[in-house]
Amino acid sequence: MAKEKRKDKSRVVLRTGELQRSNGTYQYSWMDANKKRRYVYARNLDDLRAKEEQIAKDKSDGIKTEARYTTVNELFDLWKVLKRGLKNNTFENYKYMYETFVRPNIGKQRISTLKKSDVKRYYNYLADKRGLKASTIDSIHTVLHQILDMAVDDDYIRNNPPDNVLRELKKSHVFKTEKRRALTRPEQDLFLDYLKNTPKAQNWYPIFAVMVGTGLRVGEVTGLRWCDVDLEEGVIDVNHTSMSCKSFSISVTTPAKRFLMYSSCSRFTCG
Image (cartoon, rainbow, N blue to C red):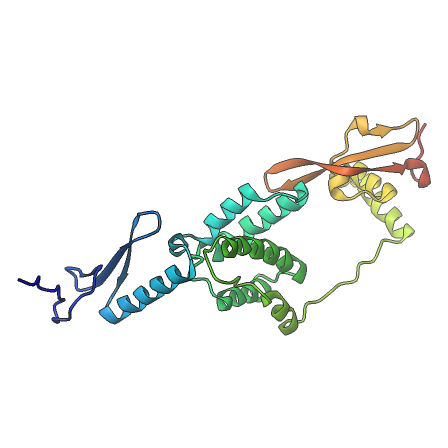
């Protein structure tokens, strides 16, 4: 005697793996490549079978089932562990950009549902609502693109959603670029005199005096130690920098040492 085929409440024959639940919705279950049972749900049978077709297509294309459940944030956490070849300060900047702008927003989205339109909407939000400059969005784009490149390589997704999105953003937005102008010598003197003679600002005088007199960057001057300063020779040995992000500070070793002479600026004399 032939086994009676399973049907839903509307007497429609259900396929293998399909089930109508007690609340009237539908469920489809299957075993993935790791022999783990997976489930998807839908309000009606047509929607469920559309999902089944997508699952079959993913399987045919070699797309991993885990992609349906993996978020951008989870992929970033893996990227952090595996990433090599970056200077520490660059790596820390990428992590800071991601944690500040991506994780609370688009980072929560599953990579299987992430579309190019989602990335466009997100970049427009950063430019229009958050008022970020092109260079900042560029940094965010760099790390997001690298993360999703890894997803493509690992067969989680077919293509990288941020591809060409930044280029389109720059064409559609007029980002203001301010030309940097160095302080003139009188302006430098005025600024340092203010710091030196204003009680509330006097603590800042030494650090800005060194920066003005040597050209050191913020990270370089905040990383200085007394052992890096040779007052007899009038030389500062810059062999590392200090980079601060929120509540932590990281010492970064650089491949080259820069030697700056105090005596090259009349404001600084050793003796």
